[in-house]
View 1 (cartoon, one colour):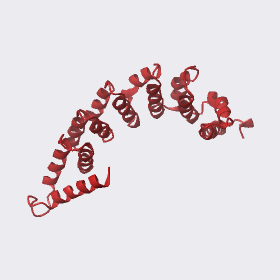
View 2 (view 1 turned 120 degrees about the horizontal axis):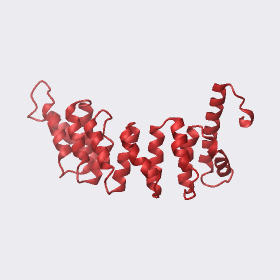
View 3 (view 1 turned 180 degrees about the horizontal axis):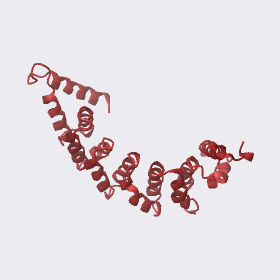
View 4 (view 1 turned 135 degrees about the vertical axis):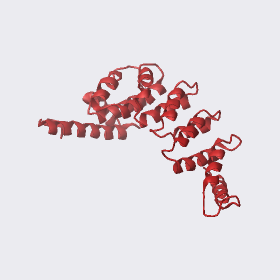
Length: 236
């Protein structure tokens, strides 16, 4: 948010709380109602509406009233409001979480992918069928979102089983393969070791990240061997 808009927002909040209609004794009911009204006011800029919504939600965290507000904003015709509201969804808010699942059918890929990432970060299995289908598809951006989301949702064994099957696809670009390698390395899957070593020694733009991931992989392998009482051998 730019400085001018933030000043305007803070000034409005100050006027609300100090206004003549506020009952003596400090009740904030009027201010609360005004915040929710502003969040719903489609004549206001998206950033101002989202700031109002965020402040109102902070004061009503866990309240049933907050579920209705977020669900409304997720159905707003303003794309910027929808994208901002996605980040406001609380994991306990089943109304809004269900609305996120509906957004997976949005024609706008930015909304579709943002909803998938939000569900993944909130550990919701509701997104699993969709991202698994993206993983098997031919759209590179959708596959990358699926890799991220499944990495958040799956345990190490599941990552190896589900994401590992993608490793041998010949159509993966370097950036996408590196993203996949990050998830597999974190799970201790050694199938990515040779490729990471090759990229790390290439001196190319991805070399530093490949080197970091190789270290992550070796740490995971050594930790697993130590836990099992095995000899790490040459993993040093």
